[in-house]
Image (cartoon, rainbow, N blue to C red; front, side):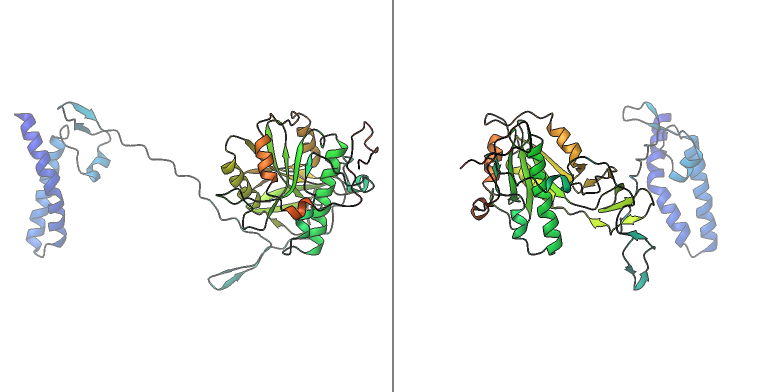
Length: 366
């Protein structure tokens, strides 16, 4: 009997308290308002008396710390509030502090940044600086497909100075691979157009992968950067790369926005070769001032940036390429994306080389 009365009060309360509150709020008669208020209080007292059977009104539930409700089988269940989910930290929109922005028509001026033309001190010297490579001939090998820097010759959206720096970076990278015996160990393809996302043909993007390097287990997609260096710290803020002189704390040159080209190229290559271990990497080439310190820099798509010396060390632990390697088919197909005119571009002063122990020895093969 007690349970039936409790259930009746529960059902009555769940439907009536809303009507009581609305009637109290919108009633025009003063006496009627007080009557409704008294009825509301009496109903609440009754609910308190049967709170073991009734999930009470939320405001009252704040007063009652641990109300008890009735389960479907009639047993008593202690009410445990659902824990709130922690909100993810709010993502702040990263802006380049060097720029000037307009906010609702009001100009927000950028903070003052002091620039220097170059780093005060030299960075770590590696032996891969341009001055150590300029007298070495540009190598050609049967393991090379295409010509380093050839894609930049066709680029029209870059300034002439940037094209020359890019060409020098790719050519010096090829010389370093040859100097460190890696050119004979691995297959390389140069200035490979980024493929279409759906078909394995050159995409309509007008961008290239500077070098595709195939080891036994990995297919490296390499983007070469020829930035100002020395005793500097490269760090990122949002999608911008900054070069800081470690001696003075001043910024060397303007910041650079990191493009999504490698992210797009990686996605396309992984789509076409899902069973191959695709490894994208951005390699910083040293200048004559040595190499700087890369402080946890990642290009869009979580693509790591490394110094040339670090990458060469990584290659030394890779197994030699072979046509039985997992990367073999992917390399052959991806290198076929290079336009025919680039494959036929041969530099007269670029001999086909045989490797000797002394990296200064070269032999032409006709």
